[in-house]
Structure formats: structure tokens, C-alpha cells
Image (tube, rainbow, N blue to C red):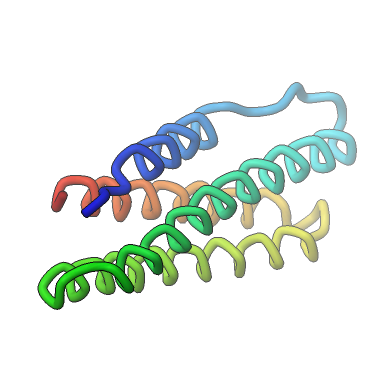
Length: 126
């Protein structure tokens, strides 16, 4: 049975960078557009990595023993929930205005920390 710790560790590293980096401050509207673009790109990268992992897990579920399938299915469901949450934030990010940005950015930063913790828990269970 394959494990997904490599992909998930990469996602966790990207999330850490996501939370600690920022954009240059060039005026409020420009700062908003820059930051929103950075957040959108990074969320898309994380979603793509999780999608790859979900696809790999689907294959492993089909090939695994019954005992392996149960654990793999649980991982699959956890990753799918994380992916869905990120997708929700991505949609909200795309709809937000400059006036709403600072509040949403704080929510997204917290969500990224929560995602990182969830992924670290999955890695620890391997």
C-alpha cells in the first residue's frame, strides 16, 4: 500500500509559506488585488495537490484489502472535506471586495492553519 505523506507534507509546507508571506504595500486597492491574487494562486496550488492525493487514494482503495480500504477511505473523506472547505474559501475570495478583504484574509489564514493541522494529523497516523 502506498502512502501519501510526500504529497501531504508538500501541501503542509506550502500552507506554512502561505501563512507567513505577504505582498508589498502599494496602496489599498493595489495591495488588495495583489494579496487576493497571491491567496488565490496558493489555494489553487493546495487544492491541486489535494486533488492528486484524492485520486491516488481512490486507486488505492480499489486495490487494497478490506482493512486497508477502511483506513484509506477515512483519509479520502478527510481530504475531500479539506478540499471542499478550501474551495468554499476560494469562491468567497473571488467575490470579496477591498472593504471586506482584511476580515476575509484573517479567516483564510486561520483556515490554512486548520488545514495544516489536519494534514499533520493525517501524516502522523501513517
